[in-house]
Structure formats: structure tokens, C-alpha cells
Image (tube, rainbow, N blue to C red; front, side, top):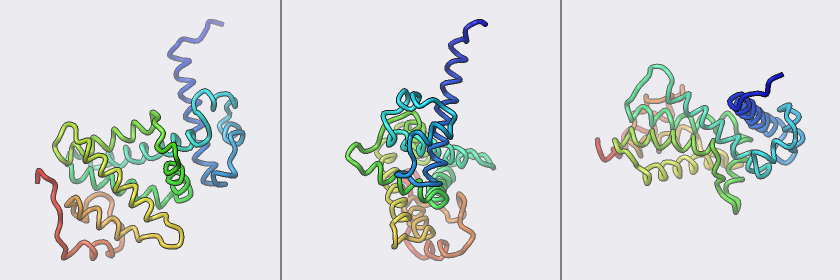
Length: 217
């Protein structure tokens, strides 16, 4: 049997890494972070235990990469959904709705993730985090019409993280419609843009108040 080519080996490693990330998402949502062990993850992924150490520095790094992968997937799907568009306002609305929607549909996972990044080591850089950041930067660039809107990207990231925390706060979560209305007003977005909720609560909140516009409006 001839040895596998470098490209085949790379594809196999990439698939193994993807399986580990997906298994982490599934198990943390099913059993919680503390109850999920690395052995559980590798068993679910059908991977050798040594692959975790090869790709990740530990369970927390694995969790962050898994969540960032999921967020990047959801964001990419939202930005590319039908009908296709290059309109910066519509793309930003889709991005906001993707993050808020993910927080609602993956509450346990996102609560664990936010707790993780607030620890001393903070945000762990990984390929998944970089892809997520690139998608958000591109969205902000399209909205503002700027090639490198780094400061505005950081502000959007902070606002989305704040909205995520507000949605996840045990015992006192903020309504998603109110948070969406605030974010949409901040960026001068129409309520009908993106993927608006089916009820009228947010639309009521967004009416009759001053709207901030982008610098290039």
C-alpha cells in the first residue's frame, strides 16, 4: 500500500478536528461543561485521546474553538442566505440576528462560553475565532464602506457580547426584542431587516425614538 499524500493526511486531520469540535458542542449542551470530560469528547468523536492534546491546550481551549466554529457557521449562513445581498445595513442586521438567535437556541453552550472567556486567560486565539472575526470585520467594512474599520469591529463585538450576557443572565434575562431594538437603533437599521421576530414587541420599541445613522449615511 502506497503512503498517503500530504493533502490526504491534512484532510484527515481536519476532519478529526471537526469531529472533536462538534462532539464538544453536543456533549456540553447535553450534559454541561463540568460533567463533560475529554474522554467523553474523544469517544463521541471517534478520535484518539492524543489528538485533543495535539490540537488544543486543554478543555477550555477546545470549548472556545467549538463555540467559535458554531458561531462562524451560523454567521456565514446568515450572511449568505437568500436573497443574496451586498447591502451593508442588511448584512449587519443579519449578523446581529444570527448572534442573538444562536444565544437563544444554544443557551447552555453560550453561557458556558461567556463564563470561559471572562476568566484570566480571556479570549483564546484559534482558527475558528479568526474566521468569526473576519466575518464580522467584513460585515462592518461593508456597513461603513471602510477597508479596515478595526475600532468599529471591536465596538460591534463588545455590543454583541453585552447583548449575549444580557440574554443569558440567570433570573433576569433581557427580552431579545428589546435588545434587538436597541442594537438596530444604534446602527440605524430597519426593524424589517435581517430575521425579525414574529411578534410586534420589538417593532413597538423601535418606533418613535431617534435613530443613529452610520457615518456614511
